[in-house]
Length: 304
Image (cartoon, rainbow, N blue to C red; front, side, top):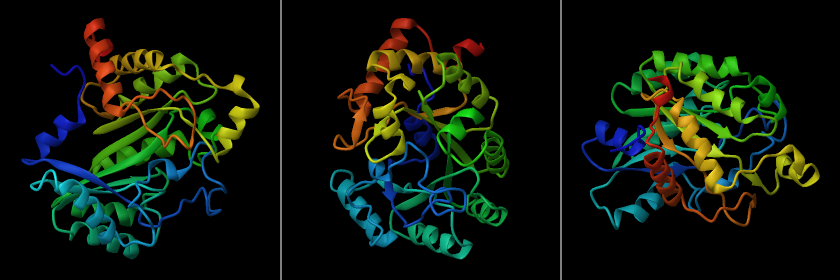
C-alpha cells in the first residue's frame, strides 16, 4: 500500500501505456537574469544542475527529443513520451515562438504531452488561453517554481516574485482545467522547521495536481554557494535521515489529493558543495517508504 499519492500511479491513471519524460533546453532565458526583473537569477540557481547531456541549445527541440527517445526506446520500444521543457523559464518569450516550440515537440513521434516548467510571474493570458485549448487534446502539466510560501525568503533568495503571484498563477491555471504543479525547496536559509512545515498547510489549500519537494543543495558558481562559504552559520543542512523525517512530517500535513512527484534532487557531484548524501532518488524514496511504514503514517494524516 502506497502511503502517499505517487506520481507514477497518477500517470498510470492518465495513460494506458508507459510514459517517460524527455528533458528539453529550448534556449529560453529568465526575467530574473536578463534585467527585466533582476540580474544573475535566483541565488541558488545554476541550470547546469538539471540539464542532461543531450540538452544543448544549439540543438533543435526535435533533435533533443530524438536523442532522448533513442536512449529509452532501446529498452522500452512501446514507450511514449512527455516533452519536458525544463531549463530556465519556458513560458518567457513571444507567443508565436513559444507555440512553435511546443508544437514541434507535440509533432514528434511518440510524444503524447508537454510538461512546462516556468515562473509564476510568466503566464500571460494569451499563453494560458493557448495552453487551455491544447490541454483539451493532449496532456499538459504546467509546473511552477514556487520554492517557498514566505515573501521574506523569496526576497532573500532574489526570486523576483511574491507568494501572491505564485498563488494567483496556480489558481488561474488550474481553473482553466490544466494540470498544475509546484516545486518547493525545503531548507532555504532563514526558515525554521515549523516555517518549512507550514508550507504544506498553505499549499494544501490550493488546486495543485502535483508537487515536487527538493532538499536545499548548495551549488558551485552560485551566489548562495558563496554565501555558504562565507556564512555557514546561516544554513541548516540536513543529514539524509533528518531530511527523511522532515519529508514525512511535511507529507502528514499535505492534502492527500496532491500528487507527490519527488522528494529530492540530484545535482552533478562536480557542482555540489553540500549536502552530499551519496543516494540516488530511488534509494531515498525507499528510505521514505520504509520510515512511513515504521511510523505507521501517511500523506494527509494530520488533516484527517
